Image (tube, rainbow, N blue to C red; front, top):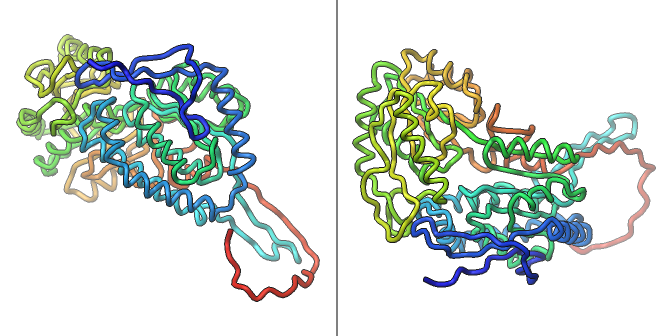
Length: 500
């Protein structure tokens, strides 16, 4: 067994050279082996990094031309595309998801970088000539300064990429605090910004835990905070950050439903339920964890799902398996505890994920896909966000019963409906009280030029991630009303004008 590798902060484009006061272990979930030792930032170090970021914003980036910003963004996008396999391997090594899923994560993050390359168009304001006699009115958007991004373990590359390219494109400096469970992918992506020509100090990464988070939430020079994580922590981040005068977008947890109507293609629905329920071991905020089968198709649908689950291979994500381990032993054990709880509450355990073999060496954190049937409100397997490979089937007598179930849930992140009835789908998208909707699409994650975010206890704050909402979150608007005398002669210059 090799010694754990030191993983340290990235400050002003270079690895931090100080001596850490505290460190934390990083594991390979497929083997249980400790592979890294992460430096944990103190509040004092966070303050130093924020000060350096503010200086970089004031001196080199906040007033950089859109031409310069776009050049850096295009170069970053190219580097990210070239290195995506390397970054995917880091995700698999520390998070555990299979390589194909990790590569898909990086690719979805790449889409946001591509969206941000259009920043000259995205930041265009409006202009009204002669709003009053010889008075013009126009709007502009300007950067905030230093912004913080606090990202979760389940998407160590994609979630930072939801926020960082947009924040940088808008002219801000960034301090990223990735999950202490799997930080290496975020650090590797951050290094690409320096290669792309971003000035030192504009992009920084600090490893850390609650001390680092609190330091970012309370520091007076941090103007905005983007967060993704569980609902209790999202609420804490929102309340703490806003109490200290910051803009906050805090995306929380979910309990995503998939309604299957009797007219649906049940084979398509069964495939979708398995894909959306067990991909990334269920560690997705957009995972389908509650399938609502509308009478009379419940028994047939459960059998189709069970049959497909029997063909899944769970194991080391580097071996071409369908599903990898959970991120830590503690999380694996917590998810497994719901299996006994579900049986005690009266649900039918159709497939027990604690049984069966896995394709892996060592003591990894594995739990195979699990299926419950006849689940009802009030059972912990339904009420709680389990965040693991546990799919619960709820029976509903009618469409009205199904949508009432979804709308009564405290979460409102995403939901899906499977049907061949266009009228039912249209009614559903109008009536359902969630932020993201799929029609015969089980994981309705929007493209980068739209925005990502839920309703109710799935979002704290008024602004969703990426898309135009992201651009507005990372900028402030101004409206200028101006009156000028006739212009004077500007001289002769026959050369073709150039941007700089």
